[in-house]
Image (cartoon, rainbow, N blue to C red; front, side, top):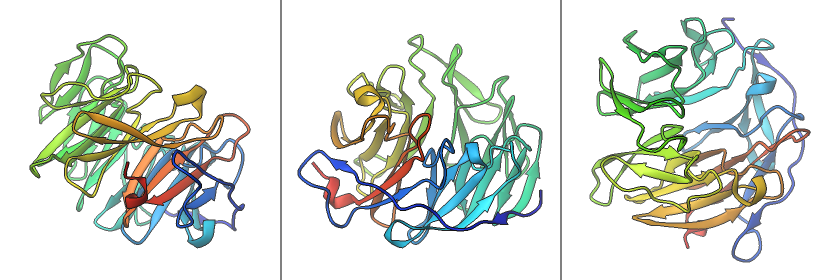
Length: 310
């Protein structure tokens, strides 16, 4: 598959629930284009454009104005097109592990069986998961013996996480593993590298099985419940993170603001939303994916970052 197909429009969205008062008028919301597509389970974007994936429907949509979806892209049925999303040098990168493809700007740039379920990028560099590790844009492989749950760049090193198994994290090439300290904590389910309070890059690993996030060399942070840590994004302010907890309140889900050792819930989902499955900061707004469960279209909510400050 060397190209992607264009489809027609979308449904109108519903509402969002904020913890403090009514929904701010500057908040936007988008509904998924179909049932059971997983809309909002993956997000990627720049300051000007944001995309949301429906990987179970093999589709990626750009989030347009006033809750509209535009410029839909589709992959072959069963390709899980959109399982991986990232921005590579300003262009949208899409992983389709069912076909083992990575596309950048609509063109296939790499093919390897099972590749593309997870994508991460920094500038013009990208890294994609494979069944046994990862492959970078310069063709450098990382052999882990397992498919990573998350990937990130820390300087010139690739970080890889695994939610299961004895090893939680790997770094470097060849990769060096960090043993899991707590069984079933799922540490490594998500990864993000953000500036700390001093502006230095700091790697965080999500451990939703324990309901925490763990900074490199530091102590866990979080409520310990609700699958907190399933998704993370850097805030615009150094030392601040936005963290999803899609299992909170019987899978309604929630969004938290984390600064230092303090995690404050700022947004709650509706029943079955699984709000916080994906989190993205783009253009001064926090985008939160809520793909929902069976028979749900899913939705994405975006709110100015300043309005979510506790």
